Image (cartoon, rainbow over all chains, first blue to last red; front, side):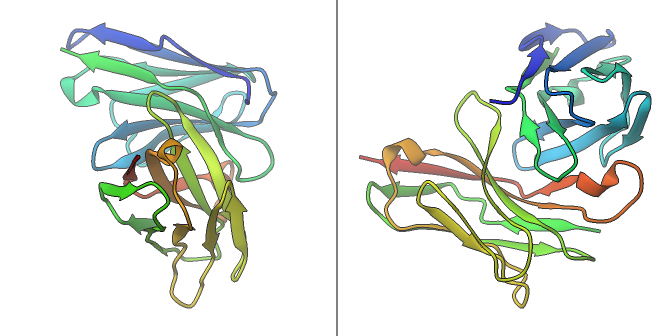
Length: 111
Length: 117
């Protein structure tokens, strides 16, 4: 398995609080991605990174920000969580091709 | 933009039955096509892929052929097992764009497969 660790694996928090999810990789891959998975929508790309400090928006980026200060870490932040952001969040990595490897996900519940 | 449409299911089969999960796509260029599988409580795993027209991807008894003329990539297996119960996602990769957009994936909504003994 690709060395991808997502933390936390589960989180319950309240509306309006800030939340940060972490994706850590040990593969030294260049590209990292954050997706959310919701019933009836499949996986949708939130943000992605193509190098340290290089990030760009995906199709559902509103309400989310990301940072990548080191190759191995890609952080996803919800500045002020809303109930619509309750979801399962997946991190993925890839190197110089389009083969993405996924972490085990973070289940986030916002009450 | 790119899009993927797949059978939403759920699909319920008996063990040893034949499986087909339909997938069609819309893309501006010449994408690579993928099937991912998600077992309960886990992340997605690549099942198979095809990178150009008429390529056949295969793995673990599953097959899919990249059909450019019908823009399809249907997943098939001749004899399913209980252990194949999972959610299956069809996806395509964006082959164009600048920066890191070359490898973005667009997913279908997923198809839940349940195989009964």
